[in-house]
Image (cartoon, rainbow over all chains, first blue to last red; front, top):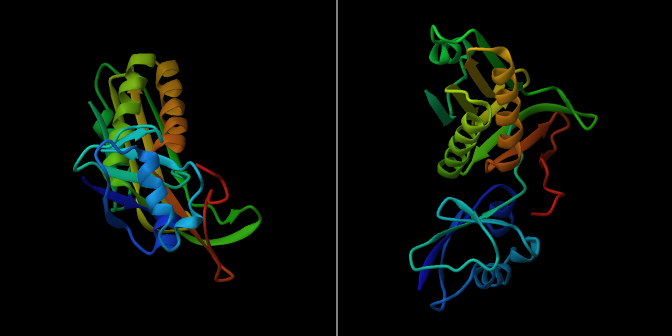
Length: 80
Length: 141
């Protein structure tokens, strides 16, 4: 199944991209997606358990992913 | 009325006050966050704010709903600006109106505090020595 990964701020700089498509096995979790991203050039700069969101809502590494989901990997926030 | 928005234009406090005003409200509370010239003893030239806008607006809207439930407020607006801001520019404005001051003040603080820890918004600080640094990048998620 295919999902979209969104990257921002320092993470986007490290990986050299703001968006990418991942091909995952059915039943994959956020953790599975993170492992794949971590294996990419620059991916080693990501922390072991970054903040993540699925379809605009915060999620966890164990959260299940579905086809067409938008997974955001969120650097430490600093608004305000 | 309750409104949360990520904006690119300059924030206009007077317009936000007008937006929440109502005859039934006897108190208007406003918080403005501004870009300051010094952070961690480094001279700041400016800040680039960026956001996962759809989710930031979703989170800020949820925070307004929570504030309504906790403090009974019905008139509130929050705007967070993104783009390149200079020292002195307003980055965030929260305006709350209520019949009495306690709920207005308490809700304002709640909305600001929750937004700062939940909204997916980031700051790239530019220093006068030419360096740049993502704020909070040393922390882990």
